[in-house]
Figure 1: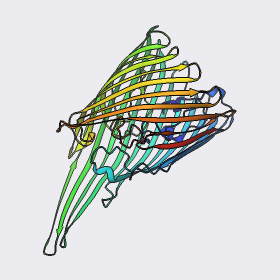
Figure 2 (figure 1 turned 90 degrees about the vertical axis):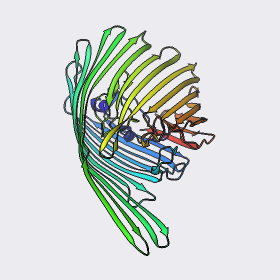
Figure 3 (figure 1 turned 60 degrees about the vertical axis):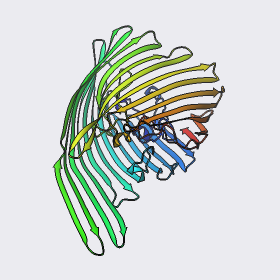
Figure 4 (figure 1 turned 120 degrees about the vertical axis):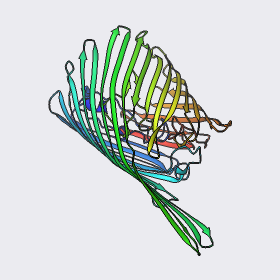
Length: 552
């Protein structure tokens, strides 16, 4: 969101799905992977612009996005629509998404601009997490509706102080449905207001970015469950659980980021932030039990009311050092502490990267506090590009237990190695290796009941190009996962190879293309974890697809 607020007056339409996070279920693949188009305001002229993208595949999968915009002097307007639906690869894996977005920009003066944006997300989905454990949620589906309104004003100067003010209102409603439970088990409604300020200025040889945020989230959370069992001979047993929580979340934070060149070959990044969040909730827990038979019946009920307060505040220091060996290679050493808000789906203008490393992770549960250490080397010059990164994360994620919050401790180790090259202009080859290990304090519902989860990926990709319009990509990926149970010496260990083929034809004279191919050619149906238990490493079925993109 930060880049959208600071960008110059834009006429090129942006796909509406770019503003959403966590709407995919397979990492880095599939029709929900958006296409990015380079943009520079220097070449923008008054007029009408548009783009149409489409996708169709097996399992009843299809998607489209239609975006259009126009630029007329100091006014730019952009409208977009995105739709995705699929029947899924198994029962209760269907989903349907609709995203609508509108953006109005008014350039009051060469340095001052006002923006207003409205977004709407409607998403129905079955159970899309991997079925690696006997989880009661596997019979559930979810319906999510979210509306976002944002008003912002920016004042930008190349040589002086620049600033922006942003105000957001978010209305979010999430409802879980269940095939076997009546009534629907879970409903969450919340209304969020976010107020932000950010300033950017130059001090000596460096750049200072600083800002402040205040947000207020009023929420209502309800859980209902009815269990009924026919015991035969006219007897039955019924249990009803009704839990509700009404409360608010208030978040305040201030931050500062400073980047400067210590010497010609060394860059320093330093940041310090203060984060304070207060959660207040009034909880009502009710349970009733009824036994009925031909001879007698009984009924008991119990109700408990209490408060669930949670006040947390942190200092979040960050330090990054980058050493440039030359113009094409560098070494980064980064250490930082970060925290995700309970209202984690609300986007802010605080920088998402620090010293070239992402400091926000969609995989983190709401409220997660993490301490992160990164060592990274990249070589981007010449015909070979290669590098390696090593990261360790220490995380504490809050989980609600009765009338208190407890922290689930996780240590995550991550190693990523890559190398790629291009042979003349007709062949490209890339090989990489990824390893992620998550070690939990103990097994519970938070981590699928496992004590340690290890995931491996080795993608090998070959690209074939002609000098005109055709390109073909062949990919072979090795996947392996190991899941260890704390109470059992045995462990679940599985591995497989996945083959993907993708061909693309560029239409000459137009900024357009068509592509087609097949993923998971050998139809591997085992569900492998991605980097969290909410995402798949690959689509667990053979998937044929064809797509197109047309820019007008």
